[in-house]
Image 1 (cartoon, rainbow, N blue to C red):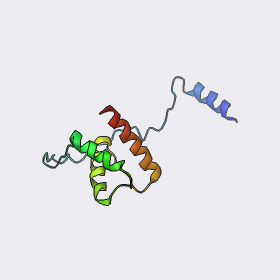
Image 2: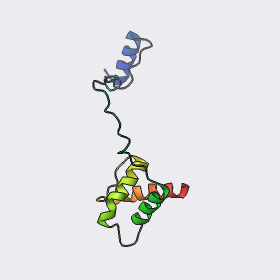
Image 3: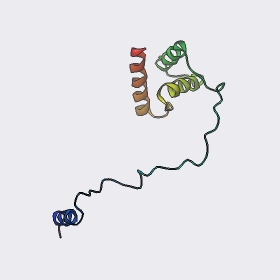
Image 4: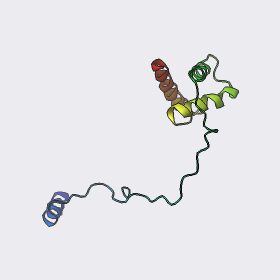
Length: 106
């Protein structure tokens, strides 16, 4: 039997029922543990000056200094929710482009 005939037989046997995607992935997962309490003193929100400084350090000539990478990563992680990958040039270029577009709207 070819594929078309199988589909026709399936539609005759089960009219109006179409199987769409994986049903295992769409089941809701139960949360067993409550979330830990938030310590508001540990949350750091960068100011506009911090963001501008991080962008200036990121785009400076001569590359990024090792001691500034932590600060740049911290600002980038706050803005975009992902770590800045200094090891991969392709990923780094994309993230610098994203940061540049953000700075244009700032």
